[in-house]
Length: 242
Image 1 (cartoon, helix red, strand yellow):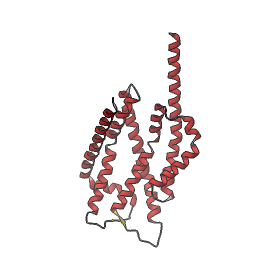
Image 2 (image 1 turned 120 degrees about the horizontal axis):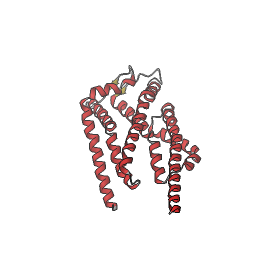
Image 3 (image 1 turned 90 degrees about the vertical axis):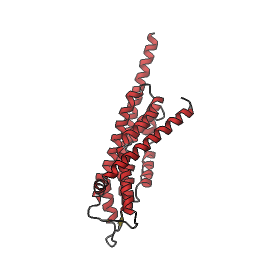
Image 4 (image 1 turned 135 degrees about the vertical axis):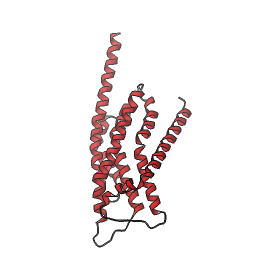
């Protein structure tokens, strides 16, 4: 395909993805009360407030958008991998669906880990940091805080599938990743400090699992390289036999 044709295809896939998020968010808005009550469970007994007339409405809109994004992930990942895969593999129809499934599972797994483990601990630390101060948390700030963490952890858990893709592309090697472990730790900590609140607990809880996934990614890249060598060796044997 010409370059402009690729851009046109990318534009349509982005529009379809945005439309899917909007549709899922609209459906989630119908269940806004149930979703909101579920999202604030990690707060425990801490009450939320709003200081603007539109505060509660925008809070429910944020909850709906976050839910819409999570609900539309399979379709969004399908659009992404459908755009990428044909330029990487011949058997794209057989590859896209597993990539979509694994990407969705990893993202949901990261968000779930955050919701049940990191979010309660972060809130416990931040809200009760000072016994002399009474917390007055606005609903908007809480939704933004929790939504950012859920998306950050979901994106961080995508590292293995990204490494697999780059390895298949030939851009990433296991040797490079193994030699760069010390730099990877620094980068992970820096990124964790940027996308998480300014407290050590959430940074460590993000950096720890992501580094474990980094080691898993090294193994995945080695498997990709092993399969590539076997395929190249088989091709050479066939050429010699001819």
